[in-house]
Length: 128
Image 1 (cartoon, rainbow, N blue to C red):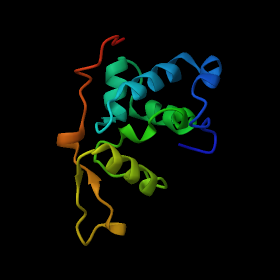
Image 2: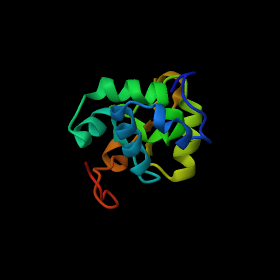
Image 3: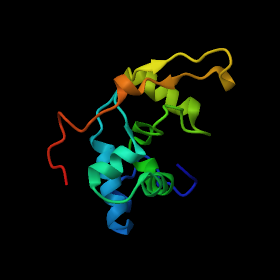
Image 4: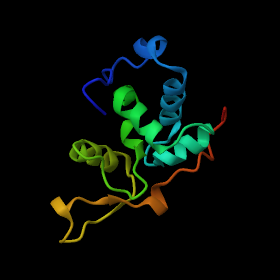
């Protein structure tokens, strides 16, 4: 997410102005069920286009209009600069987390990727 992200309360207002690839990335982000996550690479693989960096760029520019906290790094580290906001959402949704060790900077948990990762299975109708 960045300062250029559209407001969270106006996802449809920006749809006409988005590039097609960005629209597709955001649609995948909206399909991820509460309490589950997909990595940037998972989204690219799902779309059969682009890669993790392209998905990350879309999320940075336009992700504020969708559940951005559900598209994550493959290592489960919380999004830098948005850790506490994301953590609140994960806890509210019951997303599986791993407790941080004492040596972990800021003592923030990580996502438990083995349990939280969504493969696009149930509820994934309309896969492009």
